[in-house]
Amino acid sequence: MGANNVIFLEILEWFDETGNQIAHRIPAQGSAEIKYGAQLTVRESQAAIFFYQGKAVGAFGPGQHTLKTANIPLLTKIASMPWGFSSPLRAEVYFVNLKIFANRKWGTRDPVAFKDSELGLIRLRAFGAFNIRIFQPIVFVNSLIGTQSIYTIDEAEEYLSGVIVSRFNEYLGEHLDSIFNLPARYDEISEGLCERLKEDFKQFGIGLTQLYINAITPPTEVQQAIDDRSRIGVFDDMNKLLQMKAAMAMEKAAEADNSAMAAGIGLILPAMMSQYVTQATPTGISCPTCRHAVPKDANFCSECGHPLAVMKQCSCGKSLAPGVKFCPQCGQKSEL
Image 1 (cartoon, helix red, strand yellow):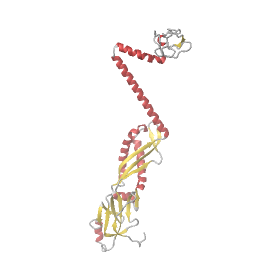
Image 2 (spheres, one colour):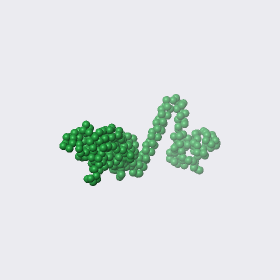
Image 3 (cartoon, rainbow, N blue to C red):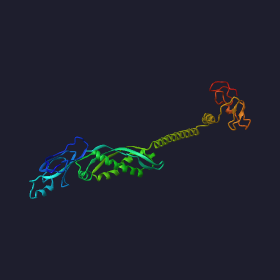
Image 4 (tube, rainbow, N blue to C red):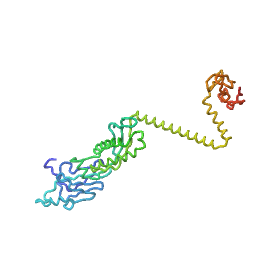
């Protein structure tokens, strides 16, 4: 403003209709002539910082304040000067918004490098949200705002997001060996990263109330490797389950009497032998030991002498025990 454009302030207050401003200076340019006894109104979600000659000389909480010597000690010294309060005080006031600014976004613009113990060097992208609140207004104004007349949450978000990404990359390298272990550790990483960032934010008078990690995404080929590994894990679990059930069945069979065990073996044996059975050919069957072709009505292999009685088959493919006259599968008369 020009030197002749003097602003005389008797009432000082601030309304933020946008909801995005963290701090607002009155006057917007330069300093103003604030009259002795001016009324300063501070809302519940605000703090007001009184600046004189570039220095913060008083902080005011919620309520209505009269700018007199009782409220600002510096005014006592000014009042003792030869001109007293015949001339208004040239000063400015910063209003600071103390509400919680929620759901602010952070994320990696470019993938960050991560050394995975199993996959080697890969690049990750990460996204999330955070909540902040100003808890030391004077520190905040002096460290981040300087002489700006308006400071918005968007400006703060852009700067703080860069701090979060830097600490995220550092924290991940110290506390995670492989991204294969990542899904179960989201909460742990989020809490640990939040605690580390609180110290960084504190130097600006900002409190980090919450930090969320929405996603950590590796390249497509790495995601495919994770999916494949998960499927292998499922198959391994199924194999273990089947082995356990088989062992339990054998244990129960061992506890049964001889007749029950014999019946059980009679049921299990055909299934065990079925892996050795080969399909009959027009000229006969194959010996399970030497694979030599033998006639259908043979009882022993003519090549190695292996008994073939249990290997007889019906034309439908059903294995037939010695002496069976009819096939239990299709009812056809046995040719044995």
